[in-house]
Length: 415
Image (cartoon, rainbow, N blue to C red; front, side):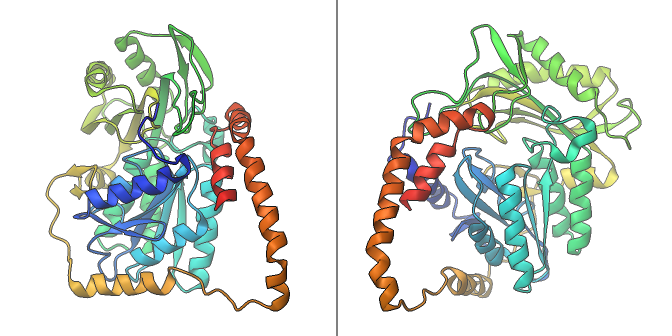
């Protein structure tokens, strides 16, 4: 459970504030999230990622040279608003357009899509891409409906590496689509997560059992099986992913793959290493050559006890992008060339933030001022009613979703 917090409604904002203060070498805060401290080089496509809080190092921890140019960060397990996304994209824009990337969840699809529409209307060319790597959330014939989980990382990284090469927005989008089409993930969990201020996890798993096919928002998965030994868990993860190899990959033997064994919050590194030893052995026996594996916490779900395995089937280009240097607060690889951090770049970005940070408030009429008391009373009634029933709203949501509806409604009505 989350033990250290103040007001649960302020948790996401306070966490982002602390993150930015701790990592100012890489990022600087803007309205709605963070962007690279040194800005986006002129003429480079900006890759802006985002989603709800509670998944660190996704999403803010992946901002830096070689990876994202900015991250829009929403409330706990809730999509950032279109306005937040637009603000971060404006601040990250380097003049060559923006690719907005996110996991495939309803709120993210809606808000990132709205942000792209507004940006395009303002003259900032913007495209979107939803990551769809979770094989448990829909069948192969409905890949577009799948969730995005730990496969976010290799897809984000491929797009960002393409942007670093100076490719135009259309080509960066193509690279992202190709990486997404070649990425598959599958996860298991042994307990659910508890949101800040919550007194119970979003779902529970019976003793000696595990949930199979979970998401990263407290979704309880598609079924339960007996709790396995570490080797058996590895066999399950590998077997499920080898059952669905992308159509343009001619079987596993002789193929090269990026491999991520991801801890969801409470499974510690030593446990992950025990599982990974068997994952590596099984993939080797299947004829798969592993390229630069990642074992650790890459996309988490607060204190959920669980693991997921991700395979990205590489071709020459995707392998180059997967191995490209990265320097972010939470993910580093190789030695990137120094990025420009001139006062001119920072001044331009800060001026843009100031220009777009708030919308002007129109002058009120006498009639509108007279209506204020009624509006305020209605809002007070709404906020107090939602607060009274926040736990029940969360409980209902947890049956079919991720359990954050009560907190989201409470924060929204209070604001």
